[in-house]
Image (cartoon, rainbow, N blue to C red; front, side, top):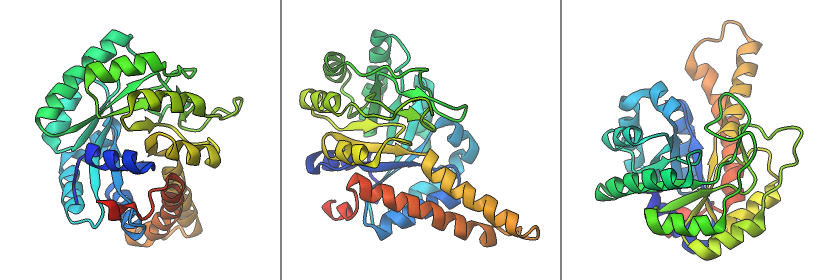
Length: 287
């Protein structure tokens, strides 16, 4: 069932679990992620950031929407880390049912104004909007936008931002990095900050960049206010590490149907672990 991010996250918010937003970069990865979501009866947000959109093209996004329509679990197609209003217009044209406008590196008032402009337009079309306040770290050239150091979300700013923009969900910075967590830093989520923000804004909250953070912290965050967690690095590492292994075992291996199944199985093991960790397993029955 193809639906919106709001429709999925409002249920997650009500029942205190987090929905995985898996970043996919090709049809095989998408197919594998849908299969494991259906096997575990878990709602799914398919996240595609601008580089991935350029890589797969609008035609494949139409195919993703068709497969989502026929799925046994609710699926939203989410434009991840949109940089500007023009990208959001593109997302609307391509058929995304959810968008993120990321103005987190801009001054507060500029971020607020841009996010409100996107939200006003998106809501006319029935598209959900995620904003971001504060910014998480960025640790490699493949990561989405981030700061050299984490800029933690201020609860007072969060209240103002949500009230004035009307966003459906809010990505907050409580101690994560895009990409791998820097080796010289100790991964640690500020769970007290999460609980304070949640108590004051109420709407679904989003966590980006959870690779390297302890599972027990992620599990608690998913049950105390975080309702969407983006996963990119972990599934892509599993997928491509297995691909390197398969290709290295036999120089004559060349057909995708001989290469990809083992890679997808490895990715699905990681995805299933995330689904369970976030509390999303079996939650498809709530829709």
